[in-house]
Length: 212
Length: 212
Image (tube, rainbow over all chains, first blue to last red; front, side):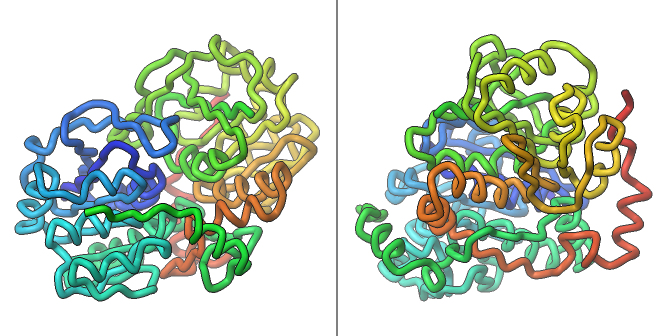
């Protein structure tokens, strides 16, 4: 089972690595990080480089496609090689997935039209521009298209996906190996529970994520 | 504030990237991934390469040191350049931290002797070989030495650390930006809640992590 994780300039690393750690435990998993060109890809903070070992043209029909989000998503909203690759991969994939604002890239490529999907809470409203029904669920399955909310939600999505692909026991084994028994020291991870002033400050300072 | 994240062959990526995403939001954070030599470092699964932009000798006095775990920890248990670097960095660090079996490396370097610490649930018992009081808490603060349980616990540790360094509001802002509102689809992330047969299977199949 080939799992292709798309990398692009200014992606958010945890969007990719959270689900990666879960999905790589699937039986016969073969994970490939893929970029427009092969080579190191720099993240949103500029302090991390993850190597794309394959170029788009090297990965023709992955079983699972995963598109992370990040500020660099805004540069991936116009048609071109990445959208073409996503559309082609989606025709044969078993699952086409995204984390955070990765769903905006899938939407811009036309792959979520008429579907239910989610995104980072600060970006979710933009999904409707692409004919997508935005929801605030943390993980959304709509047929084979699976989207997760912001950044860390990719871990929950991947566990749910492993449950569907390989069964509950396989997903539980991944969860226990990752000791994923979350105990956040604050209850501020959702706009519904975070202090209102904090939520409003982030809303004010967050730049529009969709320019095209 | 310089944050040095140690990379070594066969590290676990989420151990490093989980806390990275939180800590990088600290005011004036400068993150550096450091390896014995600079260059790409391959993870435990063999399918991921993260670039160490600095060699040990390039990073002399980081404010925060973070040591991830992973199967490769076993090759980092003997004295040598990594232990020397950790001991030197610890003399001037504000915080010396680990995730998962990274605590065994800190312990083998002599930095946790007489302290309370934690590790991955499958490896925790080995801490006592190094004069460390092992606990099953998810995050353990003992002075400036902070250790987290397995893999995903690094996210909780980093949020707690940001709270101590920059205040609750800063930690909450990181949590909300990462939309860290965990909703695992199973309750199997701890040996206390996982199905007993699963726990026993992993205990049987897990190879000893400390050979020296």
